[in-house]
Image 1 (cartoon, rainbow, N blue to C red):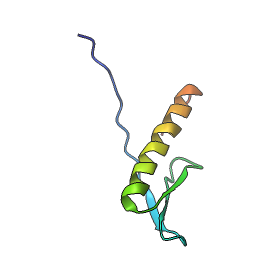
Image 2: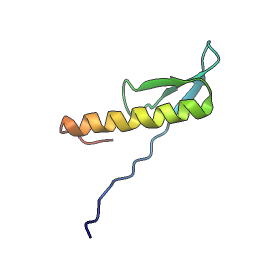
Image 3: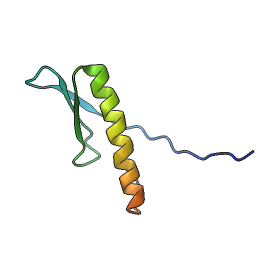
Image 4: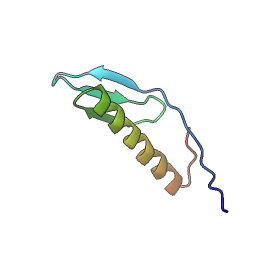
Length: 66
């Protein structure tokens, strides 16, 4: 049986209420990563997806994730 090796990353995300009533999310250690959601749950889900895409982009570019 083949084992998959997967790294687990943890990042601090900043959730700020925006003028439209939803939340804007930034991750300070990942420059340029900004996403938003209608409520906290949606914003968290969007942040997880954005972080995953950001890390995949770094890997494709041959860079290490912070």
